[in-house]
Image 1 (cartoon, rainbow, N blue to C red):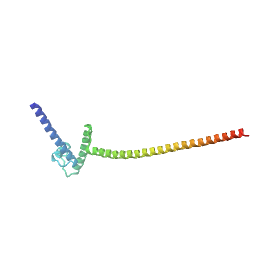
Image 2: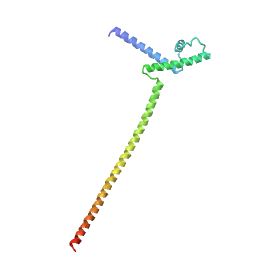
Image 3: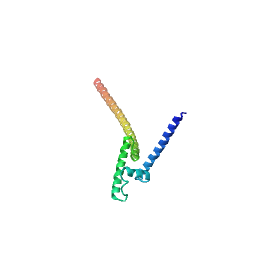
Image 4: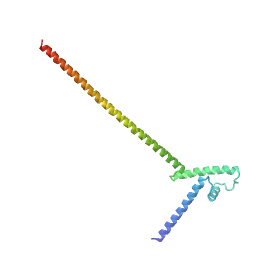
Length: 161
């Protein structure tokens, strides 16, 4: 294998591992309220102008809170720009998705139950319709039979005066 390729690839993987560690450290630091990593806290204080303020003063607390809020807003905007979402938003969407999935399953079950009821009613009404039609044919047949018998007796009376 090409020695240059191996050196390039090795350095690339080492840098990726270092960057992954930095991202994990930063994530943990943010989750702990910007505490837990002296290195990241010192860098944060430097870039947000907090290193020259005394920690026990109200000015420090106000500046810290404002800087933290600005940092989180900027970080969220950066993630949006990169097409990523914060974990808490992702988990909220996953939860909502699972709730909607359950709701859809319940609704599908209700729809299937209602379809069975409609099919049963449809079958019953078709049976009633067929029975009604059958009864109508019977009545018409009886009336026709009676009419024919009446005609028959009428013609018998006329032929036998």
